[in-house]
Every structure is written in structure tokens, then in C-alpha cells.
Image (cartoon, rainbow, N blue to C red; front, side):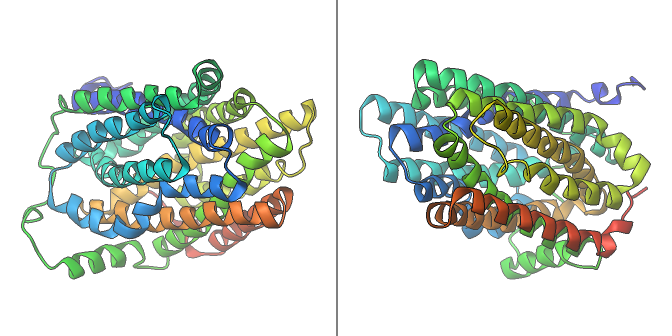
Amino acid sequence: MNRRWPLLGYPAFLRFWAADAISMAGTSITTVALPAIAIFTLGASDSEVGLISAARWFPYLLLGLLAGVFVDRHRRKPILVTADLARGLVLALIPLCAVLDVLSMPLLIAIVLVFGALSLGYDAAHQSFPPVLVPTALLTPAWSRLMQTDAVASTGGPAMAGFLVQLISAPIAILVDALSYLISGLLLLTVRPLGPEVAPGKDIPRDLRQEIRDGLAWVYRDRTTGPLAVTGHVWFVFQGIIVTAYTVFAYKTLGLSVGAVGVTLAIGGVGSVIGATASGWFGRRMGVGPAIVLCRWMTPFGYLLIPLAGDNALGFAMLCVSQFVFGLSIGIDSPIEMGYRQSITPSGLLGRLHATLRSVNRASLTAGLVLGGVLAEHLGRRETLWIGVAGMVLQAVLLHRSAFRHARLAA
């Protein structure tokens, strides 16, 4: 065992890590390319931009809790492989439809909905998989490495996406993401978990309602973890508002190119890399509660620069700084929160834990994305951004005043 780099002793995790890195690199391209298709290829309004972004997360609202039960009853690896391969094929429909000149807003929304449904199953299984790849003591370092990789992909991916969109068009650029999912799925086939992927008896049909209730009770069960979940839902509502407003504000108000917007998102990826690298230190030094509360405060402080930005070099720099601070907060927060949740959650509840959080968080994000488009179109883009910033302050205050600020990592 390598004492300095203990994760190197777990080849199953290394392969999972590699597959995750490949798919994340492709996903960061689609993050830029999808809004570009809606705005520049299909001429979408502000509301339609919010709608196409929300379509990806709508299945989480409808099927999220069921997905958690399904994952807890079945092996995670087959779910991951199937979802990855299917997502690659579904995304490939976008460039195919564009080449055939049949791509439309309703068709694009339908494709994104199917893609979102497959991603729901993948995400529930993905977040429940690391506990059977590494020992419990290495979960936080494992999630730090995964978040670092995600952050690196978020750094190079958006900039590369901007270049690809301008070079070969947004629909064709998505083909790169489709290929990344196919490669990831094939690599996941080679992963061999350390132990059983489901708890004893979880592959036997039981009372569906009771299993859903058990999952909900675990997530919201006490005065410490409950506030973390609830304020997380608030965070996602206003994050959705800001994401849609930022997209139309950058493209339509400031007149930035796809490449320039990609650069601002890439700067956010740099912040995520730094944050994920430092997350272990923050978690040990400050404790789980104080570290996450700090990150929740960093988000509104970073975002308040966006509505202040103008259509000049200084404004572009302000957008970059804003995205950097946001990325830094996410990079620090996510590994600590993941490690904490998984260290205190029984294996048989992991699928429902993540699916419950994912479904409610994504439902909140979906509402925020749609609301952001409507507000931007009827109230104004800068005004909508200020509403998003105010909401981020609200969630930070609520978590700061809750009992969660005293949370510490389980021994």
C-alpha cells in the first residue's frame, strides 16, 4: 500500500476515476454547446433557454425517488454501464438531426428529456458506487480526486467547447460528448468492486412506499442533516435562476461570443480545481459544518459581481472572478459534504440518500432554470441576477444559523 497515495492501491477506483474523467470532459462541452444551439441555431427566447436547460433535470422531479429504490435493490455497475452507453447514443441524435436539417426546439427538448432520465439512473448509482471501491476512511480523499477531475474537465472543457462550436458548430461539438459516454461505459465494464454492491436482501422486492419513506426520513431525520438538505434545495432554486440569467445576460446583453463565455466557465473550473485540492485541509482544519457554511457564503459574494459587469474588458474580468469564486466554493464544499454523508449512511440507504437529494435538488434547479428565463424576459436580466444573489444570501444565513454548523466528520 502506498502510504502517500493510498488510492493507488485500489485499481477498481482508478478505473472508475478514469471513466468519470472522460465523461466529465465531454459533459463540460455540452454545458456550453446546448445553450448555444438553442440561442444561435434555433433562435430561442430567454424563456426557451431556461426551458431547454430545465428539460435535462425534469426527470429527477418525476422519477428521482423511484430511482433511489431501484439502485438500492440492484447492482450499481450494470446501471452505470447501461446508462453511459445509452446516453452516448441519445446525444448522437443531436448532430444527426442537425445534419439532416430536422432539428427543432421540441425535438431538442425531447432528446434532452431522455438524456436526463438516463442521467438520473446513472447519478444515483454513481454516487453510491465509491463505497464499494475504497474503504470508508478513504471516501473523502476519493471524492476529492473525483471533484478535482471534474474541476479540471470544467476548466478545459468550456474553453474547448467554445472553440469547437465556432469551428464546427454547436450540434457537431456535442458529438464529442456522445463519444465520451461510450468510452466511459466500456471502461466501466472493467471495474471490479471490492464487495457486494447491494446490501443483503435489497435485491428482493419489498414495500416501495416504505422504502421511499425510509429514504426521506434518513435525509431529513434530524436537526443537523435536515438543514443541510433543505438549504441545499434553496441553493439550487437560485442557482437555476442565476444560470439561465447568466447565459442570456452574457450572450444577449454583453454580446459575448461562445468562446468568451466558455473562458469564463473555464476560470470557474480553475477555482474548482484549487478548491477540491484544498477541501481535505479545510475539512480537517475547520470541521464539516464550518467549512460548508463558509462555502455557502462564498457563492453570493462571488455572484454579486455578475450584475455589476458591463460590456467591456473590466466587465469580462468581473465575470471571470465571479466564476472563479463560485468554482472555489463548490470545489471545497462537494468532497467534504459527500464524504460526510457517505460516512454516516448505511450501504442499504445510499441509493435512496443520493436519489432523494438529487431528485429534490434537481426539481429545485428545474424550477429555478424556468423561473430565471421568465424573470429575465419580463423583469430584466440584471434584475433577475440580483434576485439570484439575494436568494444565495438567504440560504447562507439559514444554514449559518442552524445546528449543522457544529457537524464534524465521523471517526
